[in-house]
Image (cartoon, rainbow, N blue to C red; front, side):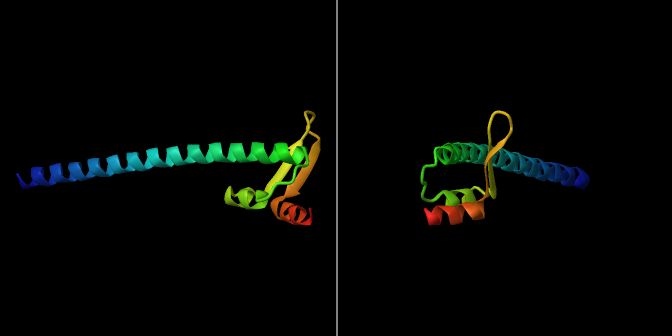
Length: 96
């Protein structure tokens, strides 16, 4: 009887841990999905404005917050049109 009680208690604890791990996985998946959307929107906004040579305040800070360290924009043939490390972009923005 004691063995059965211990086994049932262990199974209950394992089930609770599995449920918690599933919830953590769902939360991480949701958060990563949101991060991907934010990065895509940020890159699209920044690159389109860089191509148009528009002045953008806060670009370096946004890239830093998105953990982007380098930007490279190519044409349809793969030729590099704009190539900047983010720290260089900070300097260029300050000079404008």
